[in-house]
Image 1 (tube, one colour):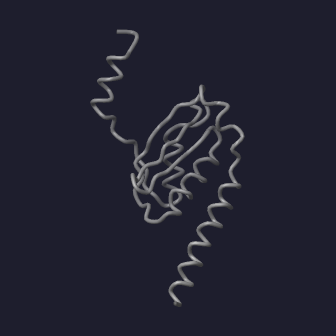
Image 2 (spheres, rainbow, N blue to C red; image 1 turned 135 degrees about the vertical axis):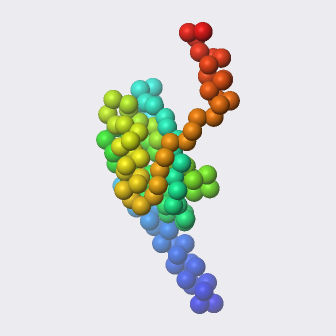
Image 3 (cartoon, one colour; image 1 turned 135 degrees about the horizontal axis):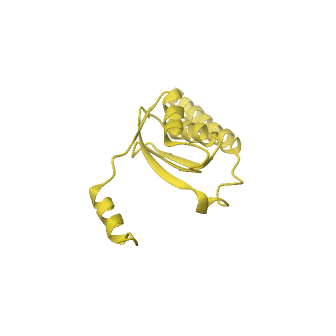
Length: 123
């Protein structure tokens, strides 16, 4: 029964931390500027628990010019919507690396590139 108490404390701590981190990030501009944003998905190595994606999201959303960020422990990725004229992908990668993870661009999928080329209106 001692272990059950610890498990409840850990779960409670994770829930409290999630709430605290969620309210610490301004969300007012998330949906208003979607048309002027770019999206990038990064590979992120070093995530090992459920708090890691939250830590990444909070850190990245603090960067001026980032509109929204998500991270997935299961996929080991972070997806970031950002204003190209205010922040660079390298700044986003540097921020993720700075909090203890290793971020890198995902190589574009050849099938996706082919689809984009076929849908390119300039062809």
